[in-house]
Structure formats: C-alpha cells, structure tokens
Amino acid sequence: MAKLLECALNFSEGRREDVIQAIVAAAEGVRVLDVSSDKDHNRTVVTFVGSPETAPAAAVRITAKAVELIDMNVHRGAHPRMGAVDVIPFVPLGQATMDEAIAAARQVGRRLGEELGVPVYLYESAATRPERRNLADVRQGEYEGLPQKMAGPDWAPDFGPRQPHPTAGATAVGARIYLLAYNVNLGTPDVEIAKAIARAVRAKTGGLQNVKALGVLLHDRNQAQVTMNVVDPFRTPVYRVLELVRLEAARYGVPVVGTEIIGLVPLTLLLEAARYYLQLESFRDDQVLETRLFGAQP
Amino acid sequence: MAKLLECALNFSEGRREDVIQAIVAAAEGVRVLDVSSDKDHNRTVVTFVGSPETAPAAAVRITAKAVELIDMNVHRGAHPRMGAVDVIPFVPLGQATMDEAIAAARQVGRRLGEELGVPVYLYESAATRPERRNLADVRQGEYEGLPQKMAGPDWAPDFGPRQPHPTAGATAVGARIYLLAYNVNLGTPDVEIAKAIARAVRAKTGGLQNVKALGVLLHDRNQAQVTMNVVDPFRTPVYRVLELVRLEAARYGVPVVGTEIIGLVPLTLLLEAARYYLQLESFRDDQVLETRLFGAQP
Figure 1: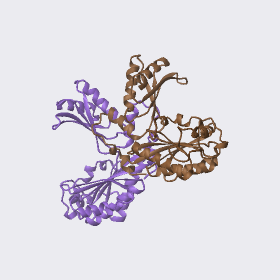
Figure 2: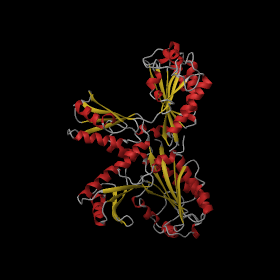
Figure 3: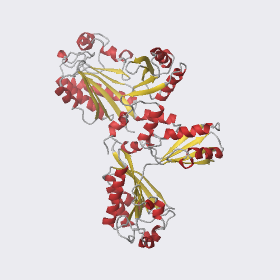
Figure 4: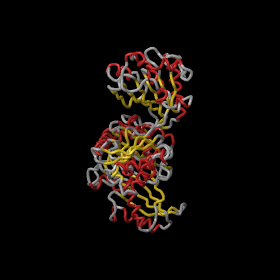
C-alpha cells in the first residue's frame, strides 16, 4: 500500500455555489473523495487524499483560492471559525506515518505564513505546545476575537505574521490519527443497559484504551445502542471493541443484533478483523488481489 | 470495484530464460501479477489481470509470441500439454460476470483460430459440449496424440483449423470461477480426526456445497490439517467453512489453532468475513477507503 495522507480541509463558505466550486477546483494532483457544504454553518469540508508530496501542495493551492474569494469580515455562520480556511488536518493512511503527516502540516503552515500572509497555529499531533493540541482551545474567540488574542503574549502563531490576515483571519493546521466511528445495536430497548455497557468498555471509566462510548436509544428502531469513537483503531482494533461489548451485554442476557461503521474505513482495519476471526496465521496485506492491482498508485 | 478478468495463461517453455521473457513481455495493457516457471514441467504460468477488453487482447498477443518461439515437436516436459500455449483460463473478478469471462474466452478462441491458425477447444464454463468441460478430458492424448484425435468425429475444434498447428499444436481456452485454497490447522497430531472432519464438511460426503476437503498431517509441525478447495467461495463463504470445521472439531475436543489462505484472494471475500463476524448491518464495499482511491482503475 502506498504512503497516503488524507486531508479534510474546512473552509468558510457553504452557500455560494460558484465560490465553493472554484475553491474545490484548486485541488489538483489529489483525489477528492467528498465535498460537503452546510448552509447553516456556511462552511464546506473538502476531503481529499494524496501523497506526502501532493497533499500539502493541494492544501496550499486550495487555501490560496479561498483567501482570494472569501472575506471573513462579512462571513456569518453557526459553526465556530477563525479563518477563510479554518482547519487543515492531515491523517496518515496506508504506509504513511504520523511523522509524515506532521511534516505535511508544518510545510503547509510555513507556506501559508510566508506565501499568503496567513498566521497559522499547529494543533493536535503537530502542536508545538501542549495548550495548542486541542482545536477548540486554538479557535477560542473565533475570527472576531483574533486581533485581541494575537496581541497577547500566549498566542504568537507558529508561522506567519503576528496579526490576523485582514480578510482571511488565521488557520489551524494539524496532524491526527484516523478515528473510527463504530456503533453496536443491542437486542433491547433499555437504554440503561446501553449506558452501563458504555461505562464498562470506555477508557475513561476503566474499559479499553482509545475508546469513547455513550449509551443512546434509537427511537425509530426502539433499540438501545452503544455509540463509540475509537480514537486509535490501529492499536485498539474493532474486533476487541465488539467482543468486549458482547461480553458485557451477556451479563444482562442481551444479544448484539448488529453494528455500523460510519463513513470510510482503511482496508487494513477490516483485514485485521478478518485475520482475528478467521485465525489466519500469516496472511499478508498484499495477498489481497486488489492491493496488487492498485498498490503502487496513485 | 472495476470489471476485472484474471488470466493464468500456461505456455510450454520453462527453461530458456530469454524465450520466457520475450513471451511475457508481449503482455501489454494488463497488470502482470506473477510469472512462475518450472524446469521439470518445462512450463510457465503467467498470471495477469486486465479489463474485459484488455485481458483477451493481451492473451492473443502472448499466444502469438509463443507460437513464434516454441516448437512443440522438440518440447519435452513432465506436465501434460497439447500446445505452445496450452491453457488460457479467464476468471471474473470485481464487478465482472462469468458471462464476460466466457465472452473473453470465445473472443480469444476465435482470434487464435483465425489469426494464428491454432485450433481451440473451449472448456469449463465456456465449453460448448458437456464432455469438454473437464480440461483433463480435452487434453487427453496430449500434443503427440492430436493428429489422430482431431481426425475422429468427436474432436472438431470450436475455432480454427481441423488439424493441429504444425509447431504450436492446439490450445484450451476457458472460463472458470475463482477458487479459494483454504487450510485449517488443528490442535492435534491425530490425522484421523482431520480426515473425519474433512468427510463431514466436504460436499461429496454430505457437507457444504462447493467444498473439497482432505485430512493430512503436517510433519514439521506435528499437526493435523484439513486442507480444502472452495470452488465457489462467493456462494460458500470462508466463514461458513471455518465455523463448520470448528463445529465438527469440537466433538473431538480439538481446537482450531490457525488457518491459511493460499495465494491471492479477492477483497470482497475478506469483506464478507468481516461483515459476518463484526455483524455489520449495511456496510458497503465502497466504504473501504482504498476502493475510493483506486476503484476506477486500471
């Protein structure tokens, strides 16, 4: 499998179709997987995948176009934001490492500062200080609060000028691991059982590392559900999560009736599940026919 | 996933490296996955994958080069054979159908007959008569027996002249389904238990449709093994085979200690196993990230 970086770039325009299209069209040399605009948020997320070389270059090109076409002084929207391009996270996939995602974030940050005059804060795994890891902390005060925030001693940007760009504000650029959203549906309408299972399996209350979990009721199905985020599914694989949920559900005599993976999932996570359940002794990723066909690309 | 045809073309040269390379080099427009030559058999299998358009064209080009470079009158080898290119099977993969594999076989057969003067017998799913389905029957008598066999009433070829090509003999061209070779290793050195399980799970003696099975002893590991071919793993999925072996092994108190998939396996078979064991309710193949990246190619 090739070295791949996924990038879910968030920019502050979700209403003017021509502007959205012009900005997305700037994504050259990468594969655009999805474009989702929200009119209430007045915000668009463009998700693309490229190599450690092409993905950062595409992020810079998209940002240049967004800086040209978006004026934050007239932007209104429900979602918190601080810039024309608000957030640029890089996620390592395939053979790419977190170090390569961090390098991509730094390269993009430097170019946004030097070439576009946009101040950049590095966040999550790319953060240069602990207090900048959390995106919500970095974005605190939003676009309108930037002049005052940046004038203080704690918020000098990692790259670029020490004041906001006059129309594009500031941008958060980061690196983070792939996150798996995984739900387990239970053969009971009793949400209290789902909540008890959630407490048993999540990291915060003594369960599995890397697992966040809540118990909810699916009204239309009249079924309780354990809804989870696995924040490092490469270390805490999905089969271990499911089987622990099953184990805890058994004490209430409740069966697992189905599960859901939300959105896209890297092949390697599904192969890990197949390896575990099929007890495969020495199965290699490149025994999957499709990896032979497509492995060297894009 | 794209429409793909796999072809494991067998030609009658396994010793002269320059000849082998020249023939394999004729495979244009397809992805060559593997080239395996055997000196005792004096035979090479080149495995490639292409579209329903490119795979047949490549098979014809390879055959033209083999007809040019191989003289069956001086060919000696341990493996049964009847032509310079002996067998051309097409296997549908991805979204390709068996009808498309059969169409590829017919197209290649027609072109070998018309353009190269090589008589062609269609076999397996492409066969035009029941007695030609089995490759061993078609090849009976081998190259040396062709003149007499073809002079008789029953062996008029499906395409091409009614006598063997003077140096290239005849070729069998067919279509068949992907076959899975799958072994289950048992926590016992007692081969009789493996044999009893094999009888229980195989189609011939009352087990699962599409499963062929034998019990053998792995001397170096001192473990008994159930070694299987699943001749239609799309209808009889690997999880069902494994769990039936496990069920039968349990009556002897014998655990499954590991399994092996031999060679390449289509992604969809592993996704089916993941769907079953993870109890996924509505997981689509295109939720696998890599299918988004590479799905439209080659």
